[in-house]
Length: 158
Image 1 (cartoon, rainbow, N blue to C red):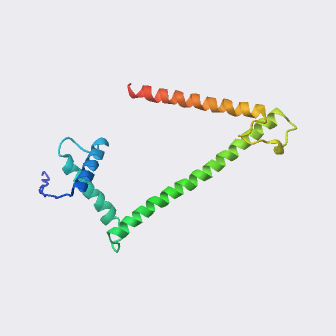
Image 2 (tube, one colour; image 1 turned 135 degrees about the vertical axis):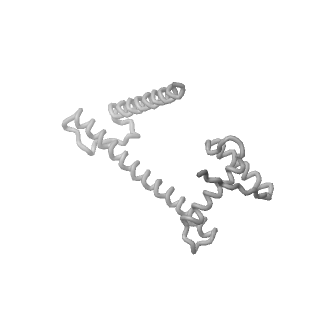
Image 3 (cartoon, rainbow, N blue to C red; image 1 turned 180 degrees about the vertical axis):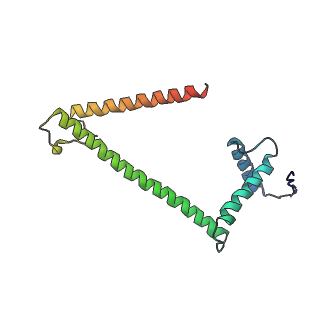
């Protein structure tokens, strides 16, 4: 048995501003390959309906009105951004600690009498060997990154 889906034709009237917004949405969905051939506006409106239904009706607290739900989603988005920023700061601090630990190991391996108080900032150029090591590491990272980009782009055409 074939499931016949009956299409219903509706007319919409837009302000010029909202018409431009709809055009941008259609362009976005076309660019991101979400639309099939033809009937792009109809398909876009169907996607918008599904999107709205899911976020504003199906998964929302029924006691919230539109503006409250919109604010809730916006706040959640901002709190997620804040959480990612916090995690990034923690990771940066841990990477800084690992950098200094590696430098301490480097100095201790080269000089058994080396003391932790002698460790210099990675930004200082007082210790020539440390500066040369950091410069060489930065150079290798750049080479690896460039090589990776070359490999990435060469695979696109295979």
